[in-house]
Length: 270
Image 1: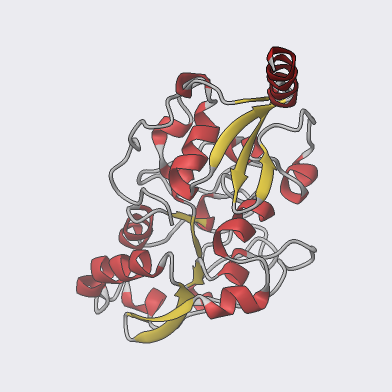
Image 2: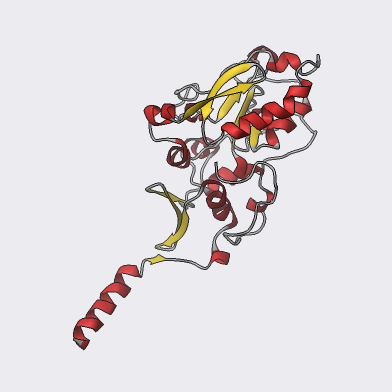
């Protein structure tokens, strides 16, 4: 019996040797941030961090040094934090390849919002957005309602109204133009405001940097990032990415899993 117990103990130790449940404070800050906002469990497997979420194992750092195009096409979780998302009243167009949030981890979005068009469609709910009936994912519907609540008192102002009077769209199962990557619109977490009042880098080489700050702030306070802060600008575009607006996700190399978000607005799992 003692030999059997010893053999079982050795077998168990060997099977667990490659996967380590780490102390909370050893988890990289950005990975802990993703787990805080999306759920899942960070694990250290073969000396590589990953996030176990909805049956997927999402690699945190694949060790690859990526060009800008590769960063857009196949980011790991860490890559999505390459550029710190800025906030504040400076709306001047960014330079170079400064595109915070334009790189999206497809596996994370699929695990959170749906693996297929049918799965996403089944989770869509209607939301009244400033007189428009839109369909968005049920996990972010309250955030869209909160943005609408912030903008409702401003919608008749001549400097705000024209931007929200017409919409470019919300849910649409499609890829991003000229790519094979799924758009955030495919997951029901993005909205385009009036295209006639917008600038897009593939339509025009430059833009003036003029956009109502109240609109940008209303979205950012609820966890949405704005495409106008990208060098490859898309000023009509807002998408729900609360992790990129959480300052604690960028500070230091390690953080505790149970640490609260750095910003009390727009936080929490979707």
